[in-house]
Length: 252
Image (cartoon, rainbow, N blue to C red; front, side):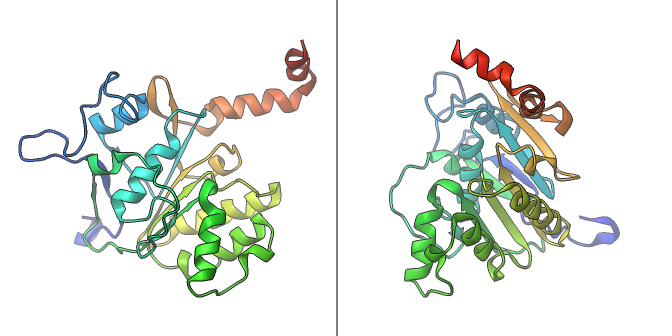
């Protein structure tokens, strides 16, 4: 409950491990290092042990293979969104490659939460644009650049109102200025009543959204961190300060 007895309008209050009557995770092996992918990923194992309280805007960062996309995909699917992107009504499938992690999660919703949601992931965006056009084209996505088509998508009613909005590496194809525009959109979404955003990114620009709950994923698991303390922020600073040092090392 929110202050004054008003039902919390957030669509997802907490991500929990799904349990059957015996207390074991339903549909999944135990979260241990020998359980196999994706349960052997430290961040996934931690999520299954501890759950995750989603903020208005939750950002996951970390190296390739740390589990960012696996986690956002699982939350999106547990919410009812298609693995390849789209809304709660979208079921376009070109290749089934998702993990079974969504079957091991349970999402706890606020009492007045919207059931709407939308999932955008960089690696399947071209296919999603084709699906949207073939099922009743509103715009010719493929006549636009990747970045322009992305803005055509997020500027429609798909990203209006409340619900859960999940983005996996949305910076792909976006210029510096376009990423700043996306920061403004993320702020607007996070401030909107009844809306939540979960995003995985490699971009220090997108991770810098004021007020975001930022989690850094690594071999140690998942740790909430300040933006200025993130490894990728430090790496970008060092590189921009003296790129020749990095390039010299690569050429040696």
